[in-house]
Amino acid sequence: MTDFMSTGEFVGKVALVTGGSRGIGRAIVLAFAGLGCKVTFCYRSDRAAAAAVCQEAAGRGWQVIAAQADVGFSDEAQRLVDGVLAEHDRIDILVNNAGVFPRRPIIEIEDGEWEEVLRSNLYSAFYCSRAVLPAMMRQRSGVMINIGSISGKRGSRYHAAYAAAKGGLFAFMRSLAKEAIPYGIRVNAVCPGRVATDIFGEQMTPAELERFLREAPIGRLSSPEEVAQAVVFLASDASSYIVGETLDVDGGLSMD
Image 1: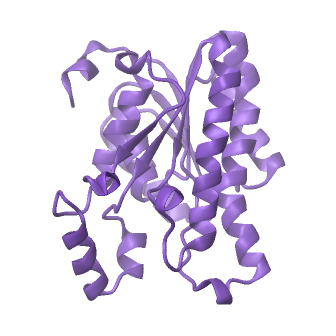
Image 2 (image 1 turned 90 degrees about the vertical axis):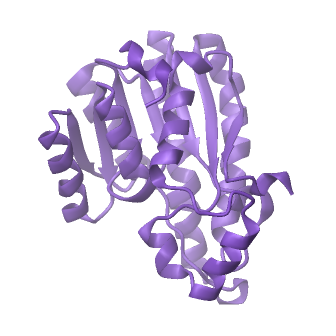
Image 3 (image 1 turned 180 degrees about the vertical axis):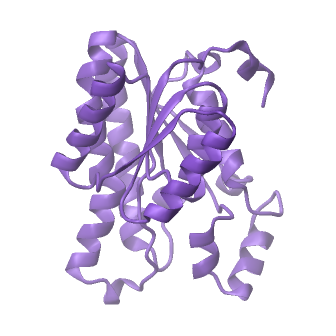
């Protein structure tokens, strides 16, 4: 942990993380829990992975709750948020991380898959942010952090729907930031590059992975934990003057 994380500022705060059962989301859940947050995360279908996150947190004495919800649908996002508010009466941190990452040439993307990708990666952020916003407005405080992708800035071969969703997410984040900041609510985004998650690894051939490593100025993939630390920074008081911005965590790819 970096030095500014040793102040105890997160102890007792309530955090909601969407898509928290694996990869970047899992790392974010555990990072906030380890700092003393009361964390609820949602998962769509992988109950075993969600249980493993809760078990790991419990073994360390951390407060983590898993809730099944498909936050790409308005009613389920609202139900999730209502449950957290019923339990804690407030939400201090929202991390919109839920998403899917299918690999498909544009000419093979069917209507249903296009809709599913936008629903999971973009609609979910809108529905959860809209559901959380009234509580944060009453509190006159809060932080929302959206997990984007370098694909949303540069495009990505065979990931057109995902790139479109993440590009829309950045525009939504900036619009939300302008509406929320008068209430003391900061909204920002983290933009990972290529992260060593199981989903990423499943889709890449050895030749593609070698090319990605050559392209990254830093010479390696990032870990989910490195992305999580950027999220924690944006949720902390150390970033209190950062509003409507995107923090690139991409090993230098955005320098091109």
